Image (cartoon, rainbow, N blue to C red; front, side, top):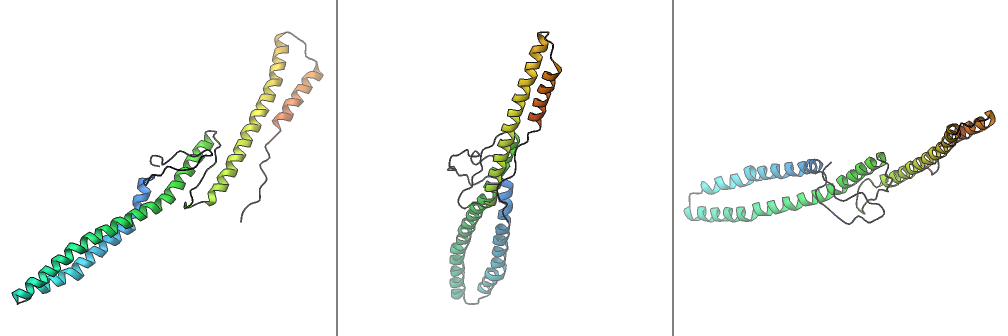
Length: 205
């Protein structure tokens, strides 16, 4: 992915915008428009303007020929800038539309990376973004990952406490009764057998 448009939000609104988020994807999105403009300009030049120029050049009357050439020059003067401006406006619109595709994909990419790294911040979409269906899915995934991390940490602390107590008693050359040892082992096994409840929430169709 390209450089970030804005950091993945953590409860704050997405306010910063950048027209180019994923350069390669957005350029590929422009290809159909570029091909259309090139083909349209070629057809206009070879099938429209070229025959008119040939007809003007073949006109035997010099006065009429001069008028036709002046009209063709005026047509060139207005037509090509208008076509260029229209193409630029269409390109800007295509880039703006592709931003609503590339932006959510970038934020999804960043959110998944942060989930792998242990961060569990929610993913937010702007009003006109595509793929809004993933917002709730990623939020649920973040919540479940946070639940797993919290539960595993609690289990680790509990088991560590039991092991530490046994280690301290052994370090003091204390004789540990079989009953105390069995109780400590059962307590640790009970902690290790705990698993986060990952269910809940109706699945969407």
